[in-house]
Image 1: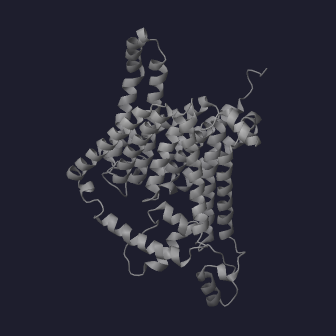
Image 2: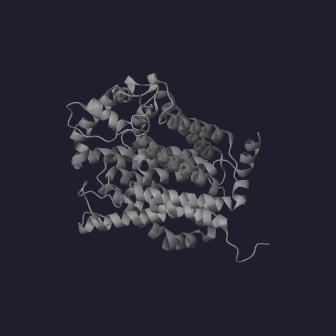
Image 3: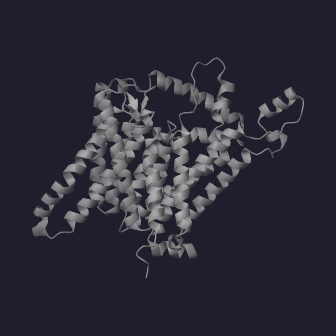
Length: 462
């Protein structure tokens, strides 16, 4: 029997992790050294508590599909470390190292990576994201923990959105105690970039909708027919009214961000969640009805937006789209000039400067995480990384299709993946820690609940 005063290391591990993920977006979206460092410390503390609580590891089983995905990620991570090492043949080195050797008139220990120091920083962030997903997977094997994590993200994300609305309404144009230096007039809350805030808020919106639907099922669908009216009234007063109002505030904050991609992907993600949720419930006819309704609503909303919103009216023809098109063309040239070895993580910006020539546009990123990852890692290992992510998403789909209980969590994670990965095609949201760690936490939670414990235990022994 446990001593009543004994520290529960399992609880400490979970809450260290949950609070780390929830609070990271507060620090300018987490895209600064101090917030990232604090997040890494929080994840390390959570891991320490997990070591002191061996029951967590005893209850954690990795099913076959996840083991394959983690194996692919390990191969990619090994390659990123190799790219930054001065241990490669001279023909593999970036040409700038050879030029440096000729200028200095002495041998130079070069690497595949154009800037190894920046690559190591990127590798450390990549490890942080992987650790976040693994910790979420291990700590949310219990459905109760999974729900607590989603609730924590929902509460913290809603507070961030309300803060953004207050700043927007008062016209302060501030981010925390800093005066805004970009996206003035757009709601970004604690983020710098409106697009990244909108995707983050979209994931929070889906979490809120999922929790609302789950509370409805638990309160209303389980009651007896003669009690239903009273239960519905009680649920609406105690939970539904306030929760729905908060969802409306989150949606308004996304609209006021003036992010076209963020709004479109948030609506797509919400539609996907509602569709997947009905599939999880085996309500096939309702799923297709909801899918058709959401498609019609989306098309009508886009038609209205094009005629009402100046930003949607110039979609694909404004300066932002034109500049990105030029950078995409240049990025393909960079990729094709070295398609097999890549330039190392964070290698795009210095390489872009070499190709930029007389172009005036200053870009630190490709504005496509997919394309930039192929440039950094090279085609073989870049494709392996996305294959690993695809395998994990297929695990979420397995949870949606086969779970009879707790299918909410793979459904949420799959909808969040649609938003995060969809935006990664046209922007660099996966390089923003506040967005990526939120997504990987949901991904790990969804995978933890995609297989029953007995099934995971069986496949772990296979």
